Amino acid sequence: MKVLLVVAHPEAKSFNLAMHQTAVNVLQQQGHEVQCTDLYRMPFDPRSDRHNFQTVLDPTFLKLGMEENHATLHNGFVPLIADEHEKLLWCDMMIWQFPLWWFSVPAILKGWVDRVFSSGRVYGAGRVPYVSGALKGKRAMLSLTTGSPASAYEPTGEYGDIYNILKHIHRGMLAYVGFSVLAPEINYAVAHLSAAEREQMLSRWEGRLKNLMTEDVFDVGRY
Image 1 (cartoon, rainbow, N blue to C red):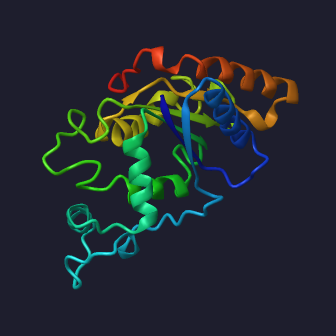
Image 2: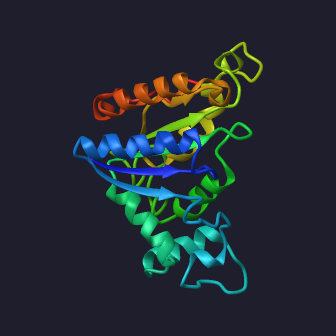
């Protein structure tokens, strides 16, 4: 299996980076090929504009979708974006590791989606959303941490159902371009746990990583 790991956390000693490194270690030990996109360490610029491209379709007015389609046809993406495209097309499985910030992904990860999920290359060009995206047949999963406890993310909790919160990512980003989505790996309130409790989470993560390709697909349309 070929696995792309995308991690978005500014602190190298964070639990998110420990989760990410655990994934690298376990997957490689299992014989899988692994590539990583560590957005803060690159560092990745999340702004999507003309610096995505080496080609220009219309110099007088920037319409990103049209420029993306043009760049797709004329090998016109800058090397950084082209490299990320190749990782997406290469992988069988993609895992995002991130902290839940303001009920969504960190801005740097959203910027990666804005720049890398390009029209013509990843979706569009006659492809039907959810049916025939360029990444159809591949799997994707979110692995995330929260600041609040699990009770806050229950249907009757203060913040509401965590699966509703994640739906715009599951369905609006991943499934839209063709990914089959697995149930998210969610670790709640990690900053408030003991070192032993965090080690238990890492151990549970190790066990799940060993069986990813046999998991059933998560129904992202239920919520």
